[in-house]
Length: 303
Image (cartoon, rainbow, N blue to C red; front, side, top):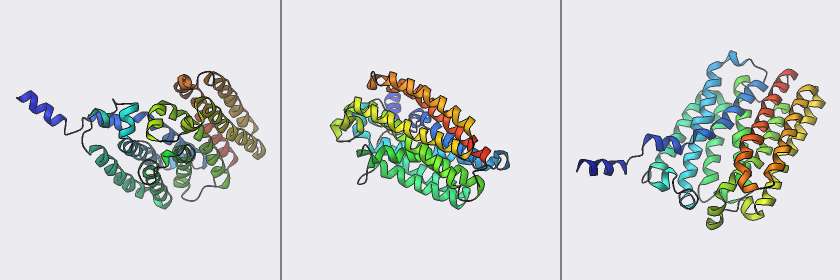
């Protein structure tokens, strides 16, 4: 009787480990890294406002990104039942409407934390929260588009946190140079998001999600993703050279050359090699982001 009672309770309340899986800590790194890039690029010493930096990192990663993952898993529970039935919601480890309540609670938490980061930080938080729900939830559900969906995620993973980190530390709008570099890396991240869609190819086809791997096929989608990742970096290299940071531009060029090599490996087997590329090419991509941030800092471009 006691065993049956314990199982009964377990089916009605989520296990803490399942909640941690729901908010996917592995996905927190990109927005945290981008926020740090913004903080570095603005030219203000990070040590001048360590509390703002740490709070922004927590907001960008565990809270806003974690909330977006919870919202996405709730809205995608039927697709995940096909693609990944062992995930917390379709497997029943997070039962009932707990996935929704967690996402809503984290939404409120995000807005509360964002209110401590000044008007720019709070405004960026509101945008990020709205974007997360627009991506996943009906009737908007931008995830159905292979163009707008990945584009919105790329913006919120790379461009928005970069802008926010620079704005919060400098207590004002970042310079046009900082915004330009952040926007270019956000544009390139669209290709990274396209590669992430390969893992959901089967379920997306069945549920009418028109990701680029679905609409173009894996081979063509991979080629498009590679081009989208590479071209903005070429522009970054050209701009930094033009602005007077040729050495750091050369470092980014070397990282891009490494990515091009990794892309040749990826294109031999896009579906099979996409996870491998995330650990090689994407790592070089985000490394270039921080190099660009230091280049902007050396140029005094944050003001």
